[in-house]
Image 1: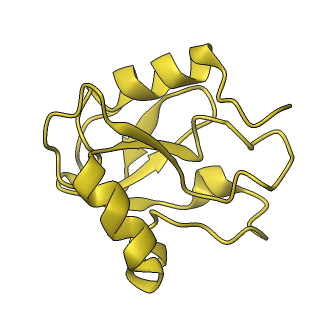
Image 2: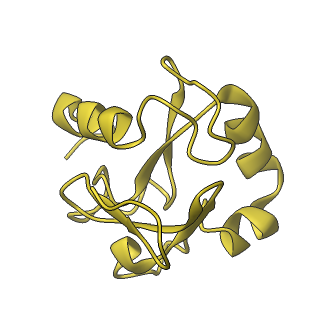
Length: 113
């Protein structure tokens, strides 16, 4: 697999995230697809929806400028994490877990898709 995100995964993530930034929930129709785990890790999760998240430009910049906080909130994942789908993210609607099929669920309450 190369470094280009497959179009199918791009579309799944944008729809899953309702074309909104996952971190601040601002509309982000042309937002950035952020790899929560380094894209240099070459395995089945390299460009998987479980590692991708839609962010607005401001939040994407924040994530890379604040790696410790981004790791604490799930927007960055260790390159050694074998199961990135199990690492939750803090969102305005609660802690969210994403799956490899482009779905998600919240830890407590919230919607499931």
